Length: 111
Image 1 (tube, rainbow, N blue to C red):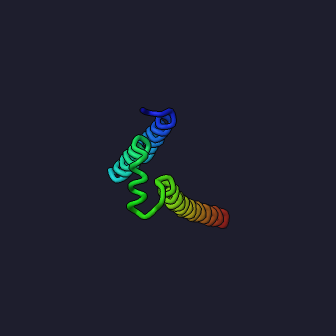
Image 2: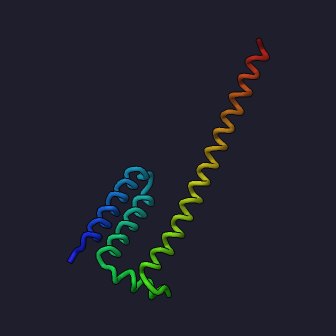
Image 3: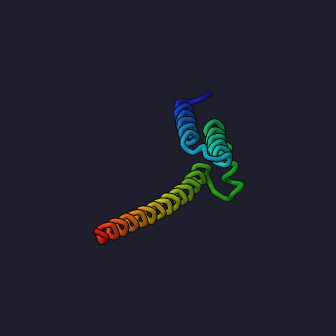
C-alpha cells in the first residue's frame, strides 16, 4: 500500500530531478547522475527496507541514518562547489574592473 508521504516524496524527487535536468543538461554525465539520484530516491521511497539493508551492509544501524550521513557529505560537496564558483566569479569581476579602470585611466591621460 502506497502512503501519502511516499507520494509526496516521489513527487518531490520528480520535480527536483526534472528541474535539475532542465538547468544542468550540459552533458551526458550530468543527465546520468540526475537519473541515478532519482532512481535511488524512488527505490528508497517505495522500498524502505532496501535502505536498511544497504545501511547494514555498510555498517550503519538504520537506513535513515545512512541517508542522513550521505546527505551531509553531499551538502558539504555542494557548498564547496558553490564556494569555488563564487571565488572564480569574484576573480573574473576583479579582472574586468581592473582592466576597465586602467583603460579609463589611459584614455584620460591622453586628453
